[in-house]
Length: 542
Image 1 (cartoon, rainbow, N blue to C red):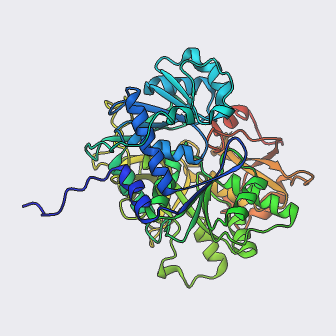
Image 2 (cartoon, rainbow, N blue to C red):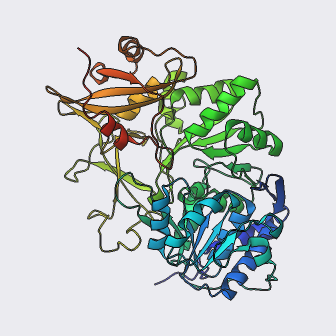
Image 3 (cartoon, rainbow, N blue to C red):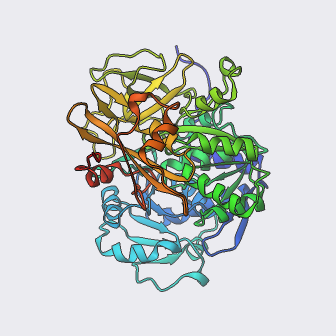
């Protein structure tokens, strides 16, 4: 027997409809790519999204077609998402920080028919245009007054293109499992893999993210996603913020510390989300200028592990609660956040800070477990390391155009590629990527734990740890440091003395080198493949 409830499909346009009906005047404030701040609201964004849908339909875009975006976080990008999905087409977000050849490969693999791009990226696309096999039209996200001569085929200013539609249009109807978004992983080896989100998965993920112990957005929040929309669905914020009726503040292309500080104070941001690098740049700006961010109350930090020193400074000096988060493109992407469970409220400050350094607990809709290499479940002791596996309604079951490759285990769990522990209270801690963990004498050493501890040493700007060969133990840790300008670098003895009460003695690095720069992936993570190659023959002195 089936229930007798209404059939109300979970479609993306339901979100912008709700925001426009219940919160029509709620603002969306953007730093435009052209320079000035721009203000609109949910009512206007919905109307313009309908015009996007109408105009795309007139251009022959149909159900399942891919419309690529190469764009920063602005109101135009948001309304494009809702317009594209409103006719059953798929927004295909492209990461401009990838290598040009990768960008061309991704656009061709997706067979995207239209590319919407910001002014910033015209030179890049002019270079790549001859290689783009499927793009029929380039829509530049600006107005006619700012449109340069590009030479791109069928190029048009977004505002001129949009002016040809009046918005007298109805959203199309289709199954909630219809594809809505496509985002490619930026893996360090092999070709990127496409993750294809559905309308249903996007809505369920946003509902899960808005649980009070996850991102917990509300109608009074003023939300600024610094994380770009081209990174894993913008961590759901372009969906979860309008779903909650929150004010949405979009920082555009300027993500340096001074610019982030300016928009936080100008727009009264009280909630934001970004990778640790952004928060480090903001801290450096405030330390250099003596400024503050008194409206900001909560920040989500994810993308890579957040050093405890950053968490402590934001919370104790600036009164900003840090929510450490973890996820993946394959998970839509939020997988865990720090939760203040009653079981842990009595911890002393240092123990509480250590717990915040973990990646946290999953919201409803995410199940997780750890296993050994044979797939056997491991205990939640907080001490046993295992392969982290996840399943849920917003987690991938196959990669786009690689459906013949199985990525789930026999129980339907996806192997994240992370090595993790889970403690008795359900707090998960990523100890490494499976390919980055250091295997010393048959035991595992967490490079992430060493890196986070090392960043607390005075003057250290960034730390990376990779394995170097050892004839006795097979692998031992090599620490690689970048120092802040003018700071004196520690020697190995000084660093190990600093780390002695923070990690197990046998984890202490066997050597230390200082470099000018550590390489990063397009998403800001440390590129350990390059470090391992650069230091493959390194041996400790003496």
